[in-house]
Image (cartoon, rainbow, N blue to C red; front, side, top):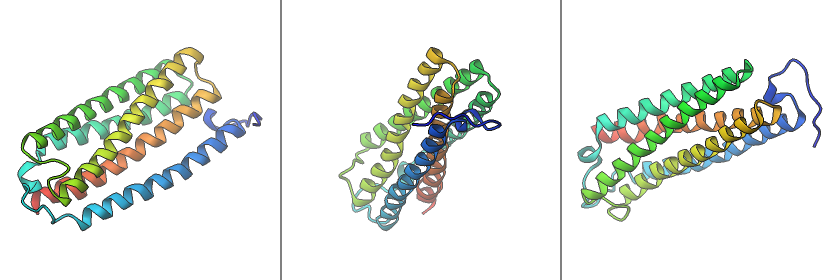
Amino acid sequence: MSENVHNNVPLEYSTDEGQNSIIGFWIFLAAEISLFATLFATYAVLFSRTADAMEPAELFQPGIVLVMTVLLLTSSFTCGLAIHFMRQGSLKGTQILLGITLLLGMTFIGFEIYEFIHYVSEGVTLQSSAYWSAFYILAGTHGIHVMVGIGWMIGIIIQLFQHGLTAFTARKVFIVGLYWHFLDVIWIFIFTGVYLIGMVV
């Protein structure tokens, strides 16, 4: 692949390979949007089909959901700051902000695991009803994506320690940032369309 350097552009866009990779990742995110749109549509169709299982309003915990939302929104902010520091040429700043993002993401997953365990302990599982199947699949798919992002970010932080800020590592930081912001947007839809509506309907 061509490694021609383009002047006066951010480091992640400074090579043809970087530009092509970022464009390719936007296409990948379009496919991910289709996946989550399908899961949201399925959830909406099955919203009232709780059968004999508990209603979501009986189980959803506003405090836990609010903490999870704050954690993920804050992690999106710190991830954005990591990109800012990267573009300023600050390796240490990029590493620190990615590390904070990583910790916030791991804490979010910890709360989500706690939430699922709590629901199961109350007798609500994937098999309890069509509604709960749709809920677990939607929230679980998002959670799995967050865990993938965590693993991905760990790998990038290691590469930053090994190679520093280069066109190659900058591209990776930028792309994982796009991915993380995408997950944050999806969570806002889950928070609004699943938890808030589930608590009041």
